[in-house]
Image (cartoon, rainbow, N blue to C red; front, top):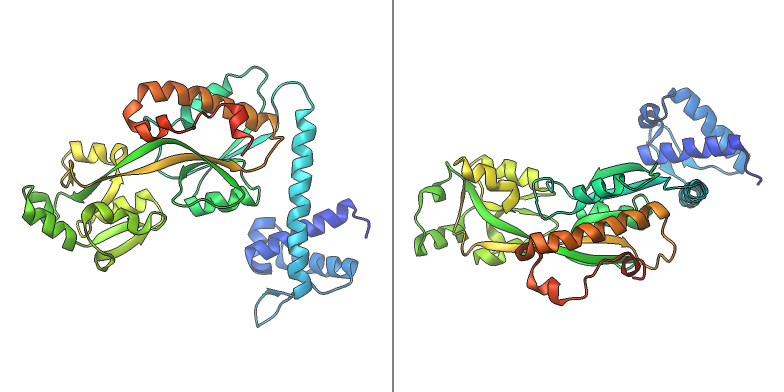
Length: 330
């Protein structure tokens, strides 16, 4: 089969239908009518010589050949995108598209290098790089790195997946908090408060799991809420029904205003390793990615001096120099 421009258009329709979960859902994504989608899908099936999907009252689902075809289509468009990026980089200066993924609620963290690194990168001469910035969960960040939907990720990762390279940057400090109307807010530090903390209803972040329970000397029976991000945890804690850990930089303004209370702040604390993640074994990253990673390295060195405590002795002793060459040899 010789692929033409028309075939590429039909393949884009097929991919959109699969990822939307059916013809009806794909209308808004493609901005065309359901009847047009149906016609184009039939044209593609005729061109290929086999049925891609079942549709009708029983719902939308791929045939076995359709499922295999979808995987090939995803790889095809990834290769086309990579070709476009490499072609753009043959021009003078920095160009192309840099896709960055981050976890939520890092804007209040003075130790996070993402924003100053972006500022440093924007000052590079002849920089025409387009930036996409996505806020995702740690699991989504890893998935999108592996399928090449993003180029680099920043976040907290409790395990490491094959095919990815993790570089620790610093430690984020969490404090145990409750709302001012929670019964524990009025209790004085001591054995009684410690006991009630172990019994209180708790919210935990799914990507940290039971690691959040260790500083509280409690078990999973007191977990009554799970969330995928910091803002959702804060919302539940503000209800006054739950206690939980939140990043200190994120919750500090509520504590200062008296809206939240830190519980046993000298005892109930925990740390999360904040890391930079790229795809492993990537000997030839794009010029835009390499340039951005160089900016991260510069900012990281400056912040290590400025926020030494947050970066932590364990990282100072480890080989975590993130100069550009090291980032590219994982």
